[in-house]
Amino acid sequence: MGTLLGWLSGQQSKSGDDKKSGRQVPAVDREKQLEREIERLRIVNKLTGALNSTLSYERVLSLALDLVDEVMIDPDESTTRPKSAILLFDDDQLQVAISRGLSQADMRTRLPGRKGVVAEALTTGESTISLQPSQDPELRRLTALQVSRVVVCMPLSAGLKMYGVLLVAHRKQEYFSEDRLQLLEAVAQQIMIAFQNARLYSELEEEKERIVEIQEEARKKLARDLHDGPTQSISAIAMRINFTRKLLERDPQATLEELERIEELARRTTKEIRQMLFTLRPLALESQGLDAALQQLADKMQETYQEHVHIDTFDGIDDTMELNRLGVVFYIIEEAVNNARKHANAKNIWVKLRRSGDLVVLEVEDDGVGFNVNEIQQNYDQRGSLGMINLQERTDLISGLLEIESKPGSGTCIKVTIPLTEEAAEPLHRPGFAA
Image (tube, rainbow, N blue to C red):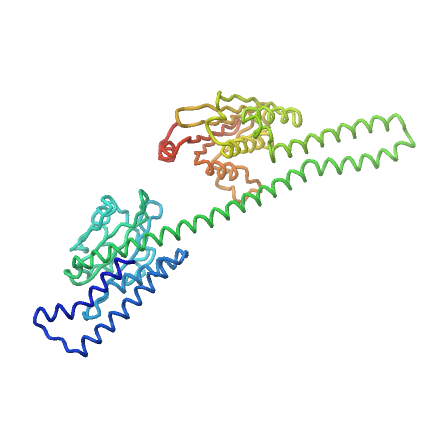
């Protein structure tokens, strides 16, 4: 902000320069010029303050181009206003997010950012200038720039993160003096700071919404599990007790047998409730570590559902990650095991954890009926269960990579690759990665 106001303040010395050059400017004109510059400083100050204070992503973009317009126009020049645009990356291509002077067709244009001055700006991280935008391999796609004689392309980046570019074009080839370029670079810095703040705030809001959605889904899952399990069992117990009361008068021996069945049903219901309480908060994870928690999970699956779950982990797994990340890994395993139990009709489920350098590889495999992965994923929004979505969201929480392999009749293998460092996370999501 200081750079902007300092540069603009310097423009007020033009009258003095005019005297030195021998050009006489009437006092009335000098006074009007000074008033215009003061008003301009006030507008720029107001725009800059608004730009730095807002956290609205859309408003940042709009204020940014308003600021560009204000600082680029020289009130002493009767010249065409510059055209400007901010292009942001969307699916590895630049999309016009907002513009001043571009056509509706231009707003729908996407630039790859691989050739010409745009590519140069993105590669070098520095401002680039095209004196023939109509001949530039990418800028020529923007029809509104065909009449421009000069285009300045400035990268919008923060650290190693490249967000997009700022384009400013004009009909006069000599329009961008060294002073104007320096001023435009200062504007781009202000834009980037405000834009990054707005993006961080937007991402924070999205994360809060996602956490709320996860919590809501957890409540719905608990409600479904209670309805399908203990609630049905308790209803059955109540019905059986009512039947037993009537049976007692007619057949005491049959009553005893019925009471035994009620007792067994009550015991099974108790096990189901304990299983649910365990998965809600596995205390063994906090006190004894992931391996002990997984062994308890396997024991409870055997005790409650007669499901054979085989656990195979490596030594020192609890030292590789902090407790919160271990908790996410546990819930990924619990979700995958329960999906196999409910939908795969599997006799065996294998849980394997191995370490490979700065990666931990988790595999949950079953010998169940399997399924067509592509078909299920295409129709997933029409299904009531959100098991696969839960797996993906929890994998994202630990910057992992989720892979699902299955086909009808051949079981299912869910593989999650978990990075232990930021350096290991970066190549994890590149195409063709293999752990």
